[in-house]
Length: 202
Image (cartoon, rainbow, N blue to C red):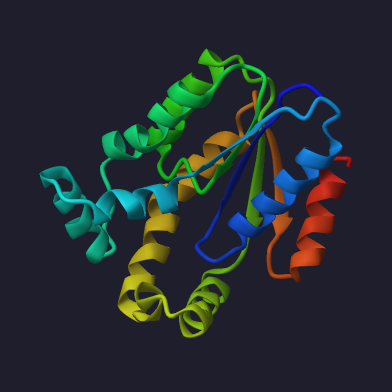
């Protein structure tokens, strides 16, 4: 199986991570050559970064605590060094939750060309703003995530998606170098997976 690239995008709580892991499991089982899968999940990496001591870490934590927008240079650093350290040319690449701005998408596109990744697939899991908010509040109750229980914080995250992330999604949607698939996310996990695999012709 030739190395494949998948980019999962969508509002907070839409199920990007869940579907990315399902797809990774499929790749691990379906690839006869058992090529490695590099999973680039920037949210967890960034949470680790802001928890560490250091001046840059503190400044980023201050922005995170108010639900603000992290600068593009920091977002790019968060994933660029992972690609530099882990890419060999033979692995599948699964990206979860980034790029998160139009500017970051342009930089990520240069990485795609640099690593000669052919026709990456962008999986856009589309859910409404209200659905996302209710899902985040429900997740906060189940998992005890304090940031997801703050309505004002959630509103800032949703505004961030509308103003910053959507232009990145539109960039990929209208870029002939990418295979853009639109999935209705307000379904069961199984239904979303079925739709995704159908559009991937799997």
